[in-house]
Amino acid sequence: MRNLKIGATQEHQFTASEAHSVQLPGLPLVLSTPHLIWHLETAAMKLLEPYLEAGELSVGTHVDVEHLAPTPMGSPVVCTARVIHVDGPTLSFHVEAHDHVDLIGRGIHKRRVLLAERMTKGILRKMASS
Image (tube, rainbow, N blue to C red; front, side):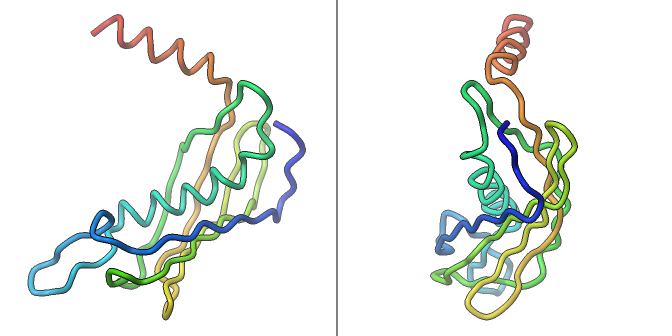
């Protein structure tokens, strides 16, 4: 991984759609927590992409996110990831998401940079043992 600085940020934008929704009894469709987390992780992955060297990838290792407010379908959402700690191949991000009205989520996300070849070997080993 190339030199990544604490404080680096990346945005990821999307529009809440039925594919990202959950239906709660008696309420309109809203953005689901798993999809909110997925989009927050995407912001962190996008941030890392330009810093990865050939053969490297990043994997999520930890998520601690509060889902603070509902987001109706059709709402634009902006997710932001900011690097807050670098410990060798492990990076920590402050992540947050806003819809057109509120802060809808925030928390901490960690990713680890590793060699894709090593991960592939581990996956193939597990596939062979099943």
